[in-house]
Length: 197
Image 1 (tube, helix red, strand yellow):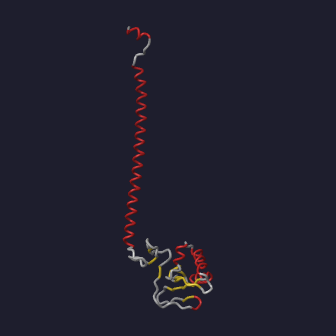
Image 2: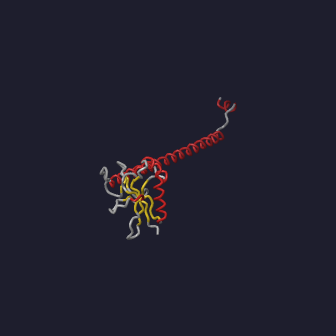
Image 3: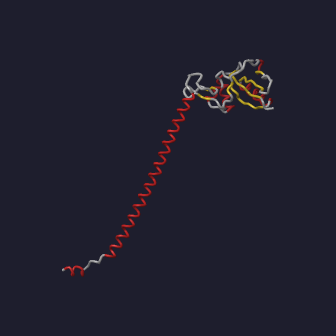
């Protein structure tokens, strides 16, 4: 069954360099620099879940090649973790585990601390719900302003189109009027001058 997880807590082999291992893990897992640093925060992070035992063992071997120590945990009922590579046994204490690097967790907008879903930041104490509500209000205000700008542009373009069409109609009327006036007016010439005198 696919009930195994690969867990990493930032532990390294004795011969490994922290910076080199972080760079290798970031490349292997496709993480940016910020998330790669979070792997070494001291908290247990789920690297992969819902794996078969052979797949989880392959991940553990790959981590060992990169210089990192990861654990495999069996999520099936009444099962025990397989332990840590190199003979170090797993803790029997319950762990605080981030569900997944990319899964649902909250990042504090103030200090950037990653934590499980909570109402306040564990590091700086900011109220995450009120900050999220304020952000939603700001987004709504920005959206309303953008919508008003779009409507104003549409209104201006329709007004400009109407005035251009009105100008063209007036110009045509003026041309037609000049032609009709010239037809209705008597032609001036020598005869009209003679009649006046």
